[in-house]
Image 1: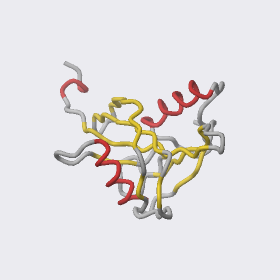
Image 2 (image 1 turned 180 degrees about the vertical axis):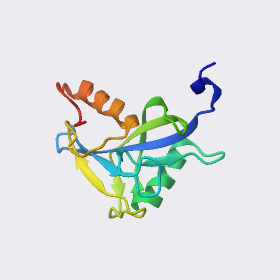
Image 3 (image 1 turned 60 degrees about the vertical axis):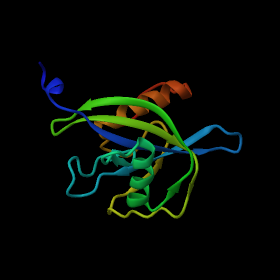
Image 4 (image 1 turned 135 degrees about the horizontal axis):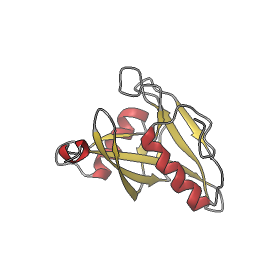
Amino acid sequence: MTTAEARTPVDVAVGVLIERSPTGQEGRFLLTSRPAGKVYAGHWEFPGGKLEADESVEQALRRELLEELGIEIGPVHPWRIEVVDYPHALVRLHFCKVYDWRGEFQMLERQAMAWQQLPVEVVPVLPGTIPVLQWFAAERGFAGPTHRT
């Protein structure tokens, strides 16, 4: 049995907030930095957090984005699930696209935020974020590196 098989995955709801153009095309997406004191502090990721007991992905995402960013989100569009084996935890990331939100963005955990397009300019990018950038590249017909290393 491998180390990953021996550990139970931690479920995490992840919000992929995307601006839409007037024509409905997907535009820039929001990345936030991991705050000081957390594992991978300073790395850039899509915002979200762990599911609490008896909480759905959507409920967790709504709670986390209110707690972290001070916004209330509209409809949640489940997109993809990716399992990432970090040294500190095995995580099951539930990526959801979000196009509508209300409120002013507030960095309530003293993190930073940046609206990005491909290729992403902020560094370093959290390993669990890289598959999402690759999915965006495939969907958007983007060729070349998705981020700086």
